[in-house]
Image 1 (cartoon, rainbow, N blue to C red):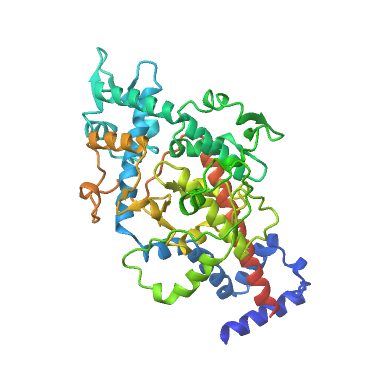
Image 2 (tube, one colour):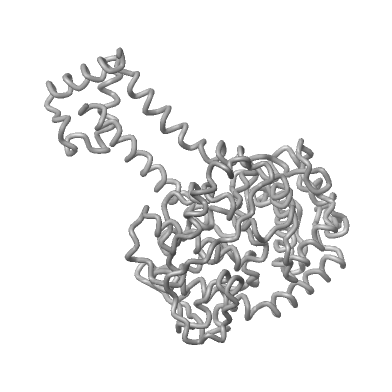
Length: 455
């Protein structure tokens, strides 16, 4: 009651100062700070404090909701892949050096990529994997890092596997383009999926030109490089779910993507006890028809049930393309516009826990395709995954011990670990995405303020 009186009094004061509180044009977003200052000058701080608390708590919902539905087996898988990527990043860094050796002091610039905050030493990280890396000093006393013969052999093995996988990777990239609105995607965004799709390290310089019949590089008005679809392949406009559940094959050359009514495979955590409560809703969701990821989705209304289910189908298809059936969620959000997906993508992933699992370990979240895992292990492992596991078996590094039963009873180095950032442009795109989210939250606060004042 006391709060309502203060809001009413502040509303009267605004009217006396020339504000029309019933008109939205007199309380735009850029006036919100002025409104806050007015409230503070007149000691009406309760309303503004409430608005601040609301904006701060909204950012914690993802962690809170995900923590309640944690799957221990997939947390182990998250841990394993994070450690593997730290080691692989160092191997790739050495591989790009002329003699495949580098001064240890030059590795300081890569602390963020391997998540090694100070005061931890780079040399300690390297010495934990003596089967992969070796250290030695030159005549001037400079410490150098290089790869062992075993690590060099593994690099040659990876090159062979990637070369054998090249045609399949080209198919996945083509189908990725076929799902996009304008049938083209920025190359620097596709770069985030390089390891996930099994693309070579030089894919931007060479590999993209090896398949001129499928896609081509173009430069648009914004001076960015795009990969553009050359020709539509109807045989590839078939989802992995259609192939699995209906036995549809790529030989169906006349296939036209349209409405689908296939249920998604569900795998709930063993400790998920709300099935009895949501069973009816899940069944209703599974029976609802949805548009194929390869069909034109521009006419779908954002926020509708059809829009959301089609977005789930897109994410399901993309995860099927990846080697580990897992992606960093940041990478998915970069394609919201191109793939016609909702702004609050994380909420959709968390809502459909039977289809996806979101691990919040580290600063960047990972999303898994639950049907592809049995416990912490992939059911079907491609040659590249088997190769990564071989590298991991030779890596002595297992991260800092924590209270979690992971592989070898170990965990990652810090809870706020950063995943690999292979391209400088990635951070810029994340900042853009974060600013978009902040703008949406600010608009929500503005509308709530407007309703309170006018009421």
